Amino acid sequence: MLMISGERLSGVDRAWLRMDRPENRMTVVGLIVLGRRLGRSVLRRLIAQRLLVFDRFRCLPVADAFGASWSESTSFNLDDHLIAAALPAPGGQRELEAFAGELSGAPFPPGRPLWTFHLIERYGAGSAVIVRIHHCYGDGVALLRVLLALADPPPGAAPTAPTAPVPLPVPTPHLPALGLGLPAWDEVATLLEGGVHYALHPVEASAAGREALTVGAEIARIAAMTDDPATRLKLPLSGTRRVAWTQALSLAEVHAIARVLGCTVNDVLVSTLAGALGRYLASAGESVAGLTVRAAIPVNLRPSADPRELAGTRALGNCFGLVFVELPIGVLHPLERLYAVHATMASLKASAQAKATLILLSLVGALPAAVEEFALTLFSAKASLVASNLRGPDEELSLAGRPVTEVLFWVPQSGSIGTGVSMLTYRGRVQFGVTADRAVIAEPARLVEQLAVEFERLVFLVLLGAGSLLD
Image (tube, rainbow, N blue to C red; front, side):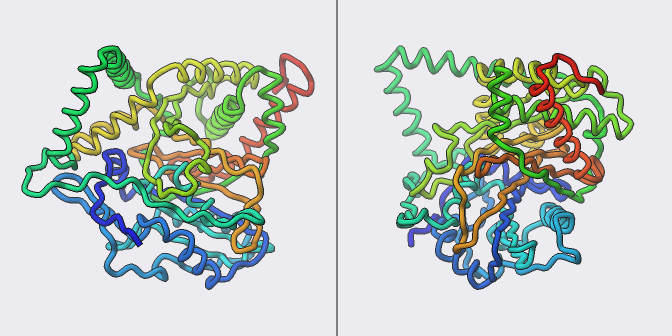
């Protein structure tokens, strides 16, 4: 098997590695609920056959003087990464939420690859699997691709073995490094190649210059943003995590609302989140009238957001930027709030903000830690939460013949941000997952309840065809 030991971490992957803090772990947490029982030996075989074809999962990131590289673990043992667990009675969703919350705030054991699978063999009529993977291994799109690799192939189809990634340039010996995690010769060659190309293609050079100016302007615009207001979402973090999730909403119903109101599915979901946050904060004694907070929302910058496009490759890593979306949490009327969100999202689609933040993360990941700390503080001050939306498979998946009934994930938050909300579509349904530091939102289930209420209010308005709704 071709191993990637020695491969350099990209600047952005290294940035996420260095963002890890005791009070805010950079761990993506996923939950897979199965309709039938799954034993540990079966799951172990599945991981060995389908997960470990991704060479990165046998490696751990190791920092050095010029950045970090992937190093194959010399003592790798799959049994260290597959842990059997049992929930306390009655062993339902609340107990599973509490266990997932504990895991989301726990560090990985030192000296091992940064991922684990926890199997709860008895959950409902089936089993549950909690997957933890450090963000430096990949973003949501890449890790959803990992889930698809674990899943059984469709009936009649042969499983696709991932092919080797395109090899990175081999470091040239005896040449000094420039300190950005790349060999000096490779950097010089890249600059020379780019210079020759733009000398022969002046129109492209002009376009590249304009793009650089646009990206620079976006970074300046982010820096100039006012800090988010001091609500309880900005309280100091305790390091103790809590998670919760909603019952599934009908994606067809969300589509219908979006179509009738002339907006997008994402507009509907983000507006529902804004309304729920406003009502939650108001119930906690906050004055939210006219208040707006920002959510940092990841934007995939691959050619496709569909993880199935990556089938047959070992493509992991992080390839996304962030946009700062204003959430009008102080607007109570669902339609007024929805159209405000729609206008904000439309303006951001036309901006270079996502590309600018990706470039900024790539740069700070290659620079000294003090520079990254400054950028992290800057990003944290501009937003009160992270919100992520992923499109999962439309068809039902199965693992080792067991149907996957639910798939959820929780996004990590960097710096001083203590709340994350995820939205994942699967099998024609969409579910919200909430993760929060206990000091910020002690009971995420209360916010989850408001998400369901706000969506039903919007449905009611559309069905009623009215322009107002009594509170």
